[in-house]
Length: 267
Image (cartoon, rainbow, N blue to C red; front, side):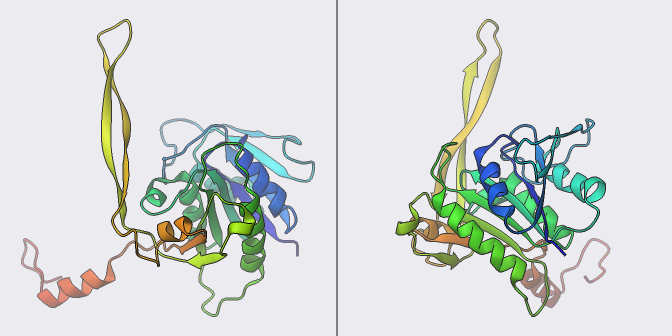
């Protein structure tokens, strides 16, 4: 049976990154695109609850052999709608991207690109979030194209012993393919944004408003097992993600301490 691949993004259906991804994925199976009509960058795993979601068919927007839809919803809405209202069977792979801008370290928590891939994993579907280091909408993504081909083939053909769902957060450095050192399996780096809200006054009326900005700080720049180090050193960084947020080490510690709650019942 022909492989079924679902594609979405958080930059919107017109973004060059998703068009590149579609061209790549078409070689591996039947592609269905369900993408948002506008950018939802930084919206993480948000869903639309306070407004209706409109869905329209995109006739021959990408290619005649690509089934495509555009929605007013978030990337998560796109995946949910595709799985429940469009696809007749579970896809073999969900691809989210290629995002214009990196989604490494703490950024992965805020990313709609990563959120869509995690939504696939929630449903037991192998998924990948793909992001390119440069924000330039016309950036040369030659390396991303080359490495995405390799990754799709590997995921679709690979047999894992435990048969667990695979969810990969992939970040491509902004370099030429000849400069690449290949792939590196990493973890998320410990880094944070030091936020600042820039205050401004609305012209014509005494109304203040604020723009969120800030600086990015990496607390472990020399740690060679992180995604930030890999990107900086010309590797494509691959972070396997899990949907289980439970801190199992702390569960054990709290139980060993006999932590009690107000009614004195032991946890």
